[in-house]
Length: 415
Image (cartoon, rainbow, N blue to C red; front, side, top):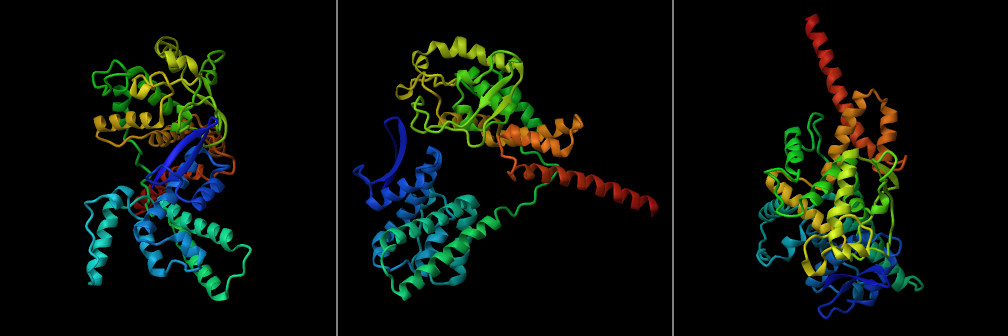
């Protein structure tokens, strides 16, 4: 079984299919339809991937989840625990034929050591684990409602079902409460300043250390736009020529949500995740962007069929001149990371933007409350968002360190 993304009447859809490319199961298809109706294509794919993960897990163990739910023979505590432990691992590890299983190992301490070692090597993020656990709960709840919603279920089965859902929900909520146990150093930067300066020099099309053999101007603009505006990868991939204010102050770009944009030929359509706003960039970068549009992008015939700024410049599967894919943007950053010997990705530059924003705000004497309001606008966050608190906490930690050091200095002088 696998995930399939396709388009119908210009709209993106996602499905789980079997080896014959047919829908896996009517209930699975109906459930996917029920959860993706109001979601963006990428969110729909993420939820469907979580569902695929759990379906593969139970299928591999010959547990017919839907049939079990029909007969009210719910998964046991042991079966759920096996699934829970698998949620910690990368899919590539679970699907690898090189993984050795030890079904006959009975020494409890030895088994614990093996599991702890596996988790240390292959553990995924807390959000991924939580998403997989949540998807199991939501799928079971949906199945129960569909299969038994209008029928009377005996009290024993109903009690077993409620206990199972309660157990799953407790595990799910535990990851929400303990999302991160790491205490960040207030003086640490997401990208060390010397490496950041090195990257700024490296991405220049004329740089001798530029890692790209082709598309140097396009790649320079992509990285520079993220650095200067702090926009997300999806927002950058969906930028259109008509979004750029090539007039007036000549430094603004419109960032907005446009779900199910029928003018987008990409199967995996990018989108802006947060609210609409105007992003500001340097005039010189804006002029370079206009140069790219007028003199480089215009050379590709298929670029005339759409308004998206950044296009593929290689004829891979006939995509030359078509809007650049999210995977292509990822490849740009993988190439940079290899050259820098430091993992750089679009969202990391978004964090770096916030660090620079803090420094500039402090230099200009902007009040903390106004700084946070401006940050929320520039990031596209709502006024009720708690995301800004992440950066506010770091600034508070830095101030706390300065005050503590001043206090300690005063104590030492009295001594």
